[in-house]
Length: 485
Image (tube, rainbow, N blue to C red; front, side, top):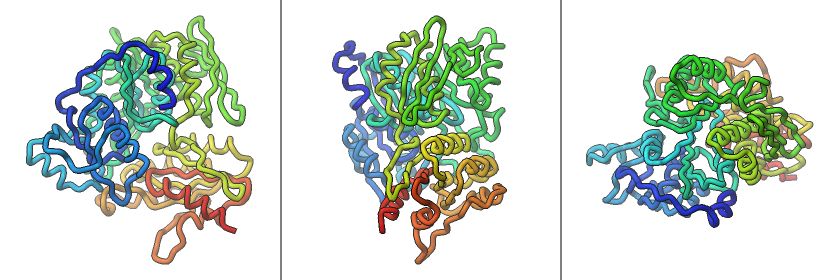
């Protein structure tokens, strides 16, 4: 625990929180689904009895090892299990869910479990949006370190954990849109909105844009964000992001309504970002709020990432934490796992990885990658789900134009076959007006995608892998391929 250890040893006395009965003994079916590993590690640190389904061929050893270190057991459910946690991953054996239902055992999703935990926390800070929540939520946990926060995140800050039980009164939750269960959803299915049962003290909204299947269009996203905002005491809006200015305008017309704090680069912002200076290794950001002005340096690449950290600072400031304390906390923030993380360099070629899913995130990470090289940027892109890839094909194709070349991998889908969806990769190819996208079709005797990528790059170029599954594996394979004479 890099960012928290020092603060926690000398902090205030620990504030014990009760655990909901449903979460006192849980079995986690799919820890790889967004947010579920953070939830499981948080519960284990709260001394709940947590079991996690044993590993399978596609499991991530690092993730499972981290859960074991938190106290979770990798085995089948215990007889005393109070509920199942299921993120909706359809590679999970359905018999386990059916058996639980037959026993009358409740099956909870990430959203409902977070709501039950937040209801017992004195102060909840929610980070919500159609995209771009991960960097802001992770930075916020570091900014608030002087208050010894608890958190449940979709992705861990570098060197830290996705779920942590501090001793303070603050609980930070990342209400990330799920990216695993959508391919199993019938057309027109309405998802239970994340945060539907929350009443946060502060909500930081990072974007309000289409993100199928949760929000098929921007009006849907705006309505959801507005409903969550109206249940909040204060709403911090990241101005400049899709839909955010409209949301701020709507909220300010409501009487009564929550306090609205805007953060952005305009002179009319409540928290004004005066400047962002890229040194080649990190961003130096200057913010002004009221009579305060502060500058902090964070090792994140890309304008979007730097602004996400500024938004986190603004959320901490609205709680009443002095700006200098927030700056001190951010001094330990090293970025987020798989957000433009460098895997290595081989043959003079840098290989980085990205966890981007939404087209705006993909475009932002590709633009950030270009800041790190004077050579070409080659993307290796694995679409997430046929349903989402079909719905956003045009936007994804546009985002990929930020790369010089793109190797398009097969769609990662947790549903066997295409079900009722067309091939999302084909839709992306058809939507693009460029010949810079090359589709890799796996087949018997065919070389792996790393060989194709290696044939496209030369010394001084940069490769960015983007995606949840195969893209995660290709980086190390590519480095090994490039290392061969």
